[in-house]
Image 1 (cartoon, rainbow, N blue to C red):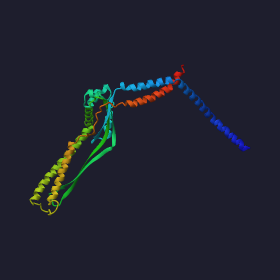
Image 2: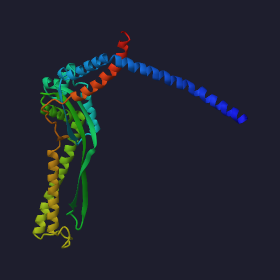
Image 3: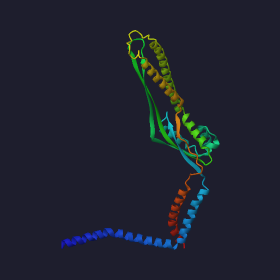
Image 4: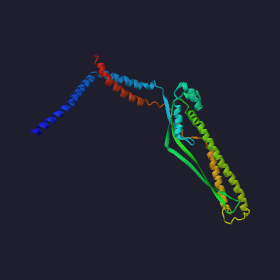
Length: 313
């Protein structure tokens, strides 16, 4: 008997706990049914609101300014990509503002008319495209004052390239090529970049002069060897007495001199891997996407507003 009483008590407790939930669900179902019935009776109002907002969303393409959106990939050799992206993002506060057009034009070294055509500028680092172009050169410094004496000289210079993507939105008829030149000018001619570039130039010039001097010293040594005037204490067949080794070493110096001259010719910080593409038709904003969003918003507004309007009738 006690077991039956306990079961009955547990059932009463469960009913007491679930009754509010059941009543709440029934109230919700009744309210939802009433709402759907009201919405069905006012379907004309629902369709009118939905179509009105959808038409407005479709007509936006005839009122919103049209732009061209494109991107390019730049590589920086003297500055980290993150540093370049911060510099570009700082330009965004100047773009699209008529009050700051003259400042933007000055920073990019372009006309104010072209600066006014820029709607948006942004950048993002591409860590996966960063690389190190490493050139190691080993040479021998010949000691001709004493026999069998030489020292090994090694140096290495590294060119670090960090890539980043530039995203540009301009008016459809803007000269993208000139804007690209302006962005390259902006990144090349900041004070920090100029100092880094000058330091690199001096280092490469010093290395080049070093190779020229060593090449001339080998010319003198080659003349001695060719005349069989080997300095006292130098054994026949040694490196100093072998003209082939001297020719090879001279060729190495000359090849490294050419590499350094190539580095000096490409001393600029910024290199364009992929330029901005000229877009024939405007592609920003995406009006098809805007229309889709307008349909979604139209449906939500119609669902919410229709019952409220119906209460007035």
